[in-house]
Image (cartoon, rainbow, N blue to C red; front, side):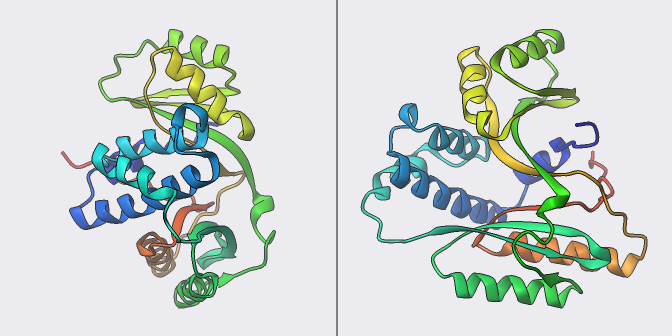
Length: 247
């Protein structure tokens, strides 16, 4: 899994503005309510909900907000459904967009507009997913590198991981897609605290964009998708230049 480093992105997300954090709260909140409604409000009996609560806490969502969401889950009349869209961005970059929506016409129309505006096109189901493989991804923060690498690796494989990556600032544990909750729970039982534990689409090949105008269009597409409240996750195979951390 070399080349799949997410820690710079996670750090930047945590440092976003208040308005951006509010959007993150909204998106995670929807996921929590759906998970609680489908699997019950007790995280000890609902592994998906437990992972989402961990994700919420990692994104600094207050405990009071989380508790209110759990209380509202049973009473809410919102009928959200999970829909995955696929398409191509500029330079043939493959994009997968996971949404959680109560109005599929609004969501599909919005996504089509974003892709068209940025020189891409929304495709049919299966049009780009063959370019990705689905993996369970568990992210453990290790800001000061205090976690021993060898022990963490041994613990990860004992918990059922299929791959492990130790880098500056964090640890990434890879699992088979359906094992992510089980492995995350095992690691938590060993004393580890994870930031998120979810299935993700990992690109098998990357696409480079050399034209600066197309780079800007691809960045705009990702920004527009990120701003949409219905969009939960975006995966792509753009070989995106890493941003340098500011001191």
